Length: 138
Image (cartoon, rainbow, N blue to C red; front, side, top):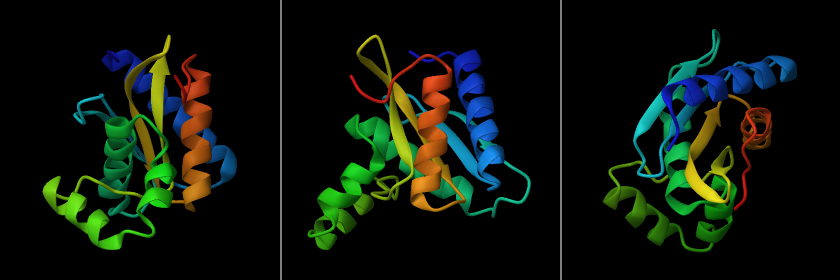
């Protein structure tokens, strides 16, 4: 399980990556059950990015894969994607921009971002997970 301190470290590392890219973003850390552990919205990031980052993080934590994998999987099935989004009360967000967090081969959460392009969001999340000594794969 991720601790509060680990969550704060992830958010700080993600913020550093976003600053390096020159893009204000919002970051959300979820535990494997989809519960919010931490949220950080950088100055200049649009308000809606808070909800989007949480949805992406939830999706990555729920499936244990980058949220881009769910985007790819759902592209040919938009009705099914909408059904899952509805069943999860809007949490399922199959868009690029989040990665799972693994420690010693165990899924401990997900880190999502919003504010840049999907690829920029995912890159910042990946950099943060690696910076704290975790991995995005089992």
